[in-house]
Image (cartoon, rainbow, N blue to C red):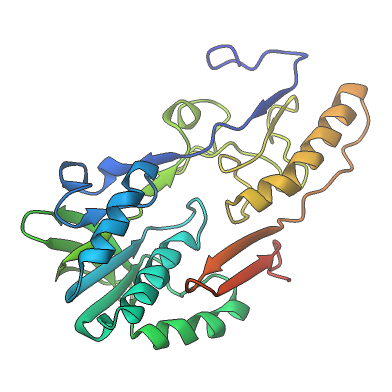
Amino acid sequence: LDGCRVVKYTSLIVAPGLKLNWTGIEGLTETLGRHGVTSNYRYDLAPYTWECVQELKAGRAVFTQPPMPIKCAGAPQKAMYLSCDWWQKQGVLHNIKVDFCSSGAVLFGVPTFVPPLMKYVERYGAQLNFNSTLIKVDGPAHKAWFKQVDGEGNSQTVEKEFDFLHVVPRQSAPDWIKSSPLSTGDASGFVEVDKHTMQHVRYPNVFSLGDVASSPNAKTGAAVRKQAPVVVENIDAHLAGRPLTASYDGYSSCPIVTSSHDMLLAEFDYDLHL
């Protein structure tokens, strides 16, 4: 890629991953890593998350999930389940009100896996808040604000107090992808590819895989593992002038850790088949 022009006769693989938009939530960057506000989507804050979990004996713990797509769609839930498991083992969970605030309308996008996950939601006494998107944080005041949308599309701002807040930021393609001709042109700005061949829909010498590709699969390492051989085979076919026959079926998997000794492995493809 030369500036915003695609170089002719060269096959390119575009795979820069996603951008984590920390500034998309008002007040977050000023308080992240302090006042009980943390995120495991920043590796350097994982120790602070653990510190907050260990120190909380009573109060309100709020876990958030932004609009999809995000890296590892099960990760926001994992943070909640593992925290609750620890609190339960320490005998303090009954003193902690747990809220899971998700921008989505369901606990998990594949219906098959909702019932087994609900068993852990009920075990830990977590309150589910769907269609609820974090928009603002005041760390020193221990308050967070959410845009709550009802079934008719009406929205209101809901204020929640917290003692512990685990935040997952909104995610999109990097800015240089979003502003390039490779982009889908929408807010997410992913590299626009055919979801089966992983070839760009307008530039046949460009292929993409991983989180930045527009293919509607869950963005996980498992997806990349299945996409990579498809891209390699199809690039070889493109360079040789052959039809592209390798096809990615949307396979992905989300290992959702529900306690220190339990895990649910969710596997599915584009058709949500196991």
